[in-house]
Length: 107
Image (cartoon, rainbow, N blue to C red; front, side, top):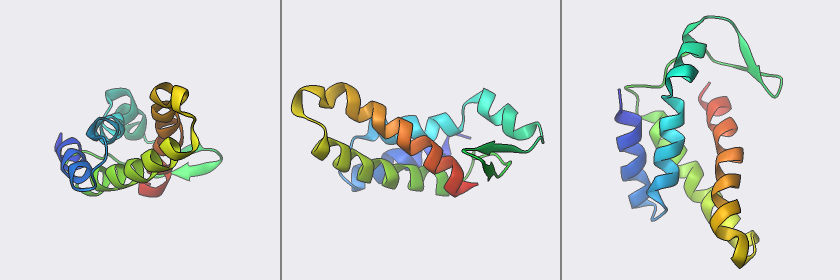
């Protein structure tokens, strides 16, 4: 069940990015309320785009994709956010931008 988290950790280490971002992104896909929402069977949409109803546990693709996306977003946000604000706003922006993209692409 926790395979995406372990794969996200390994992928982020290979990409030389912060593994905490990739682990948090992969873990958010395995959150029980998110999984129960997916298992309910009612069609949902995010930003008026339909989301595939499925579970992300026991698969490799969510962990790999989350780690790659976090690595690129981390480098980009650390480059454009000023030095004093990096420690707070870079992780916030990574999650605010990365989670919807991850859910929409994997769905």
